[in-house]
Amino acid sequence: MAAELPDYYFRVRENGATVFRVDTENRQRRIEMDQIAVINIKNGEVKPHGDRTLSEDDLAEIKRWMEERQALLAQRDIDDIHRAVDYLNITTQWVQSKASDEQLENITDALLLSMHDLRSVLVRKKADRLLKG
Image 1 (cartoon, helix red, strand yellow):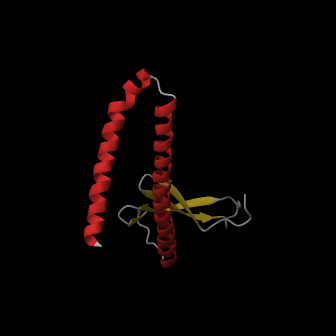
Image 2 (cartoon, one colour):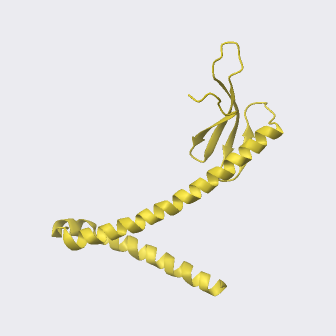
Image 3 (tube, rainbow, N blue to C red):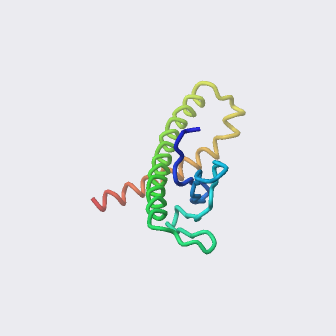
């Protein structure tokens, strides 16, 4: 483990994280993690744990983590979409070159409906952007 640990640890949860203060300054020289808050990344809510009052440093570190986490999640969303584009291209190649009639029968309707839904939303969003610009 690294010689110097961070002052805070964020255990990622579904919509945020549980925040712990890391303490190594004790007699046993053990790592102790004291829960100080729970945060919701979706709505920005920070709930102190128990009767605890968060310090300015606590709040500043939580805010910094939330900003970094939101940027990471946004980047992952875009990466997922780029992978979806690649996967659509791979699917097209599979349909054209390898798929059997039985396989095509199995996926065609679901794929066509999904693609129609996506196309409708993309066209509507593009029209909205053109009207704004």
